[in-house]
Image 1 (cartoon, rainbow, N blue to C red):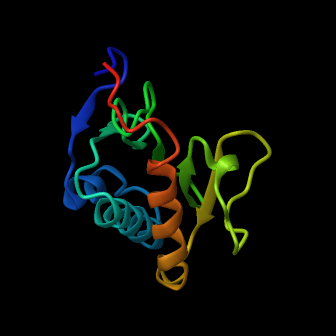
Image 2: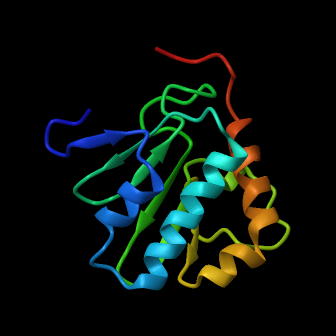
Image 3: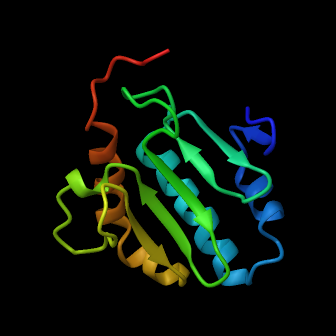
Length: 138
C-alpha cells in the first residue's frame, strides 16, 4: 500500500461507484463496467484502488508482472481509460488501443461502447495477462 495514496484491496463495484460519485453518471457506469469486465476475464486477478485518483490496478506481482501490474482502469473528467501496461505487444484487430509508447489504453465515455466492444476488450485483457512469465514475482 502506498504511503501517500491509501488503497482499498479488492474493492467492490459499489465502493468504486462511491469513489467516483463526483464524475458524470455515464462515466461512473463505464468505470464500474470496465472493472467488472476485468474481473470476469480474470476472476483471480489481484487488484486495488487508489482512493485519491481512483485508479484500479490489476495483476501486480501476478501473471509475472511486478510494480503496477498488467492493467488499470482510471476515471478521468471526460472518459475512463482501460490501460494495458504492455499494450503495444498486443494484437488489436479493432484498433481500440491508443498511445505511442509501450503502455496503451482504450478511452471510453459511453457505457454502450463498453457493451459494443465487450468481446474485444475481454480478449485484450486475457492477452495482457499472458505476456509475461506466469510465475509470480515477489
